[in-house]
Length: 194
Image (cartoon, rainbow, N blue to C red; front, top):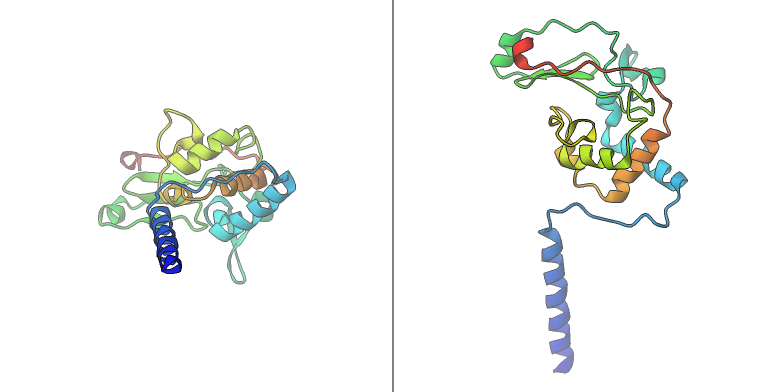
């Protein structure tokens, strides 16, 4: 009888913990006290490649198998030297969202947005603090600054905010270790300016 009561209590506790954990909308927190910088960078490289940061933040050229990253511009964001394409605003008004040919810019009801420079250069995130990087991915704030505008589509910060602290810290460490790309990305344009 005691074994049965103990087993039921254990099962009830396990189910309760599981339900509470599944209903927790807070991002997972983990401790990094024992993780080396090399380990953070290695994990960050894995995560950046897994979640597709290159898709939007790295300029591309058309290659034999489709768009290919231009290695010397990796993570440089929308190239400031590139002319802006003319936008058919009627297409957007009819419900369409458009992407630039290499995915580093997009147009929609919000206007035209450009993928930021996330390389280690000072025109990218080279001068950023880890706290700023967390604010970008957890709160969707431009350059991770209080009082700045919200990030614009298609940046999926609202998905990335669910990553653990260690994941975000690892991505930041990796990006800070990348080759710097000097590139000041153009400012976003409101729809009325297109």
